[in-house]
Length: 140
Image 1: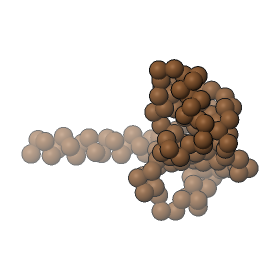
Image 2: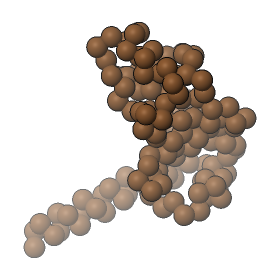
Image 3: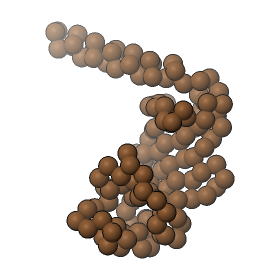
């Protein structure tokens, strides 16, 4: 019986923590997300450089979307397999980040439709264009 009570308290506490995070998300942001993703129910919100990022899964694939405080879409990000990175990305990593490997990869589409690709290496994201050309590094 004690185990059931402890589990129930843990579940309620985690729900309260989640609610505290989402209550700080502006209404226009939540409305824009709900309009764009009406069937997504489990969402984790995070404030990122004054903007709001929603992280969620669709068909077991990690996704995120970034909005400004007025609910304007800034970018979407979808996890992809390493083999789906543009040609040359993995070779670039092998040459320029010797001894390191790509942990995760993602396809990013900004509000203008520009697509870039992200290769996560350790605590850094390496960004490439659609053709696999290196653009920049971002520290996590």
